[in-house]
Image (cartoon, rainbow, N blue to C red; front, side, top):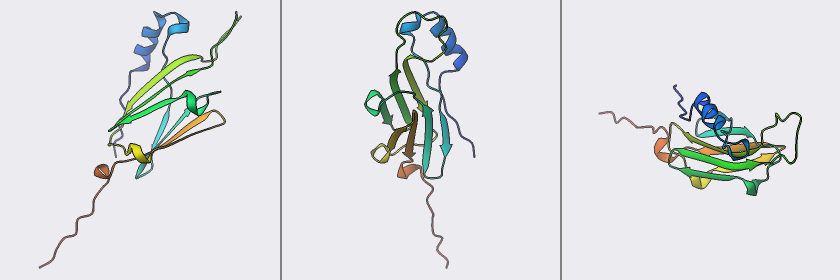
Length: 130
């Protein structure tokens, strides 16, 4: 089974972000996605975020996740921790049932259960014998 997820290539996103001041750059959110038959399950690290700080939207087969991970304050000798705004838009291989989608955050890990729409699930057709 083929599984395609379309997104902005990371090498292009990095070049684009390099031309924007660090505090204004919108980063991509790395995710893992599994196909579990009737659902897709997405996992992403969102350290220190609360549920109300995320904006998650589903339109047909497109999932969009936006938010802001804690901003760094003051001067640093070294700053490697991710901070600032992020946005991720993914086109999944099947339409989703947004009404039954579930999202939770536990210990800085976002987990989305995205049920496939009825129209995207396989149907069994009974063959009549004569």
